[in-house]
Length: 341
Image (cartoon, rainbow, N blue to C red; front, side, top):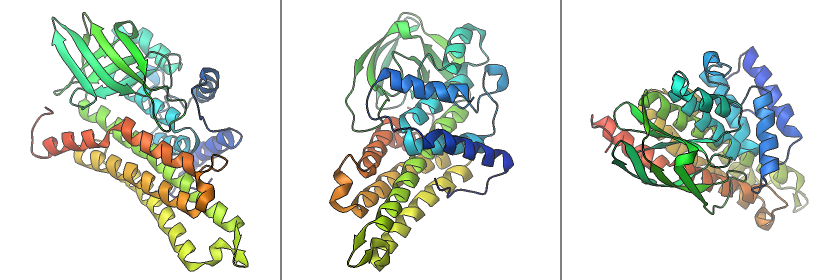
């Protein structure tokens, strides 16, 4: 599998090889088969990749941000649902990892046995009201590749609420892609919700750049699939790659994937404008590149025997899950010095 991002150091090259070896023998997650999803997640946990970026004192591996983004990009190529679930797990542990009240949740999240969603109070998906120290309402969708999850709700000014699974009820939500995401809407009725102090900018940055890396992985895989198909398909006496307009399209696809990945690695994780813009551009690019890759396959692109149609569905579903539009609205307020509304 190709790499179109920044130059890798020795440790990152080892992780790159590890991820390629792991994923080369695996199949994409195309349904909600719990056993299949849990097995795939278990392999990531066993290799220390599930919460790779979490501090060692909080149960992770303490890897640098760039190494984490590398792993997420690789996951985006085959298991984007697990990539997004891992992003949320790492963001949640950044919020609760040092709080003894949540040591049980942190252990389960690190072990992959408990899913966790991180949502923003200001998101259009979130309809919560405070009642007597608790929270009540609904969350439109979460994608955690697990059963009923815990939830961290980011507030507007450096605080967050932590909701345990027993305060939630879930109902399945239909989607187009992200096989294995086990998407649900949540009804919330927490009589008392634990409040914690958090670095909201850090956590939002982790979510946005993590999702952008997964999106870049989808784009990269789609571009590679288009090149592979065009190289092997004969038309007019030779491979499709002999046609200039085909080569131009393939180059544009590769360029889009490269730009999204490079921007993700270069963004300042503490700058809300940069992270929101990077996420929005990466998600849009993934949809555009995947759509072009499908066209490169001709009519075969719509068949499930080829991966092109899955990349389109995954890209669209990831954009819905990561909510780049909501991030851009929050960033626009940060740009002019206003708190989230």
